[in-house]
Image 1 (cartoon, rainbow, N blue to C red):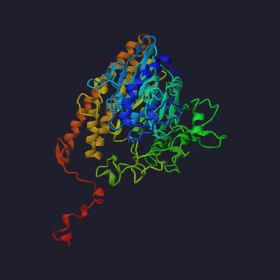
Image 2: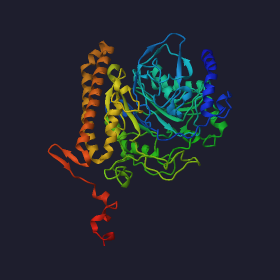
Image 3: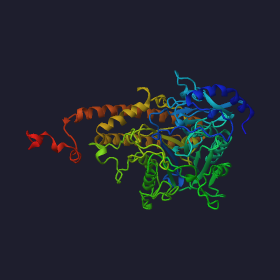
Length: 605
């Protein structure tokens, strides 16, 4: 149950929220306090804001690291990566819970917007966001006496003790909004509370499950991979049809396995007594009362995916193609099929043992993928243009809705790759459990789309100021994100040429980042034992300095690309204005051969 202080506080604030909610949603649904009330059903959200997330367990990694990755494909949302410091709090204090616009869009009644995602200088200096109205809490929960330091994005990322999160949004039967006193948590705030209070993945899953059941869950279907240095769990959640509480399940990733999710629930059969699974105490009763249980035969295990969702959203293979691709890159010998019978296929295992031990470079490769070398290669074909761009810009004719939903519109579709033009940032959390804590954790961060960006190493500590500034509403030279975005956007002018320059520069910078990481592990080993805080501070300063150097180098790369490819030529200091034109295979698909070179008569005859 909610504590009396929290309930009283929510009750006293409710009239102010009621007025704003009525003005925005034009519905009285939010005013009903009973659990049986029909939940608010929001219009379908644009499905561009969708992510890919992976886990490499220690037994599957080449150096015993736990790796957790996440691409935040956020349609020009808030790209700020923010350091939240550790804090001590007075006994009896309350923690505000804020609305997440990434769940259901801008919510002016709570001053919750995609940009900036949060305005609360008490949460972190990086969230001061002067000039913007302070965020309004949906509710409060009792505050912990001490909260841990962590790195935050649109979802929680990694804390000082090596607790790590990824995320992806999933289709679900219900998508609803927050309501004070009934539904105050979305996965974003759940992950942050867990990072503030937990050291292990099991603790985090248990805490988030308790918060869902006590305070209610709103938003979309969600998958949260959560791992520590030794163990990884996948937690999935969806709004409840009863308007309060929420539905959640969790499953452990076996050590020695690789796991991936891409906007579709990945947990299937729920087996009572399975020590590698957990789920909410109300789950079975709720799906039975809603008539959602699948299969209907009570003697068979509940299929979580089918019981709470249509499976994929947007279009067939929007999710499954990425799952197939990532699993196939990790384990080509598995021979997984690219084509399946439906979105609820059993063709792709929950996790897979890779053919060889994986490392950070393998995960980067996965996140930079456009199906190169497969039948789905997006750098090929007419749509790739003359210079092989993998980008496929979406518009009003593209699919929306869930695949199994009869209201879904499917006029055609592009393949959905892992690296997308609307990717805001990608990170790979790495924790080396064999090292002392001050040296064990590294956050490899690439701002903007990963295929045209570079991964820099950071720690759970104060960040370079430019990396905490990710406002996409106006170009700013103070923002690191804009520095990387310039290169990613400019590359589309002559992609097949520029991508080679970009990849070469990224490889050099990333190799130097690994060298610095290795050097510091040796140089600071003794200090990490005798003075751990001092070792952590020195490592943080060194990584931050390198991140700033890489950002500056990326600015120079942009200038280099502008000069080298000016006016459509290829230019070098010793040979300017090299005329390269268009590839013959592309010209053959145009009306080039019917141009005026055939003669002066009509049609060249």
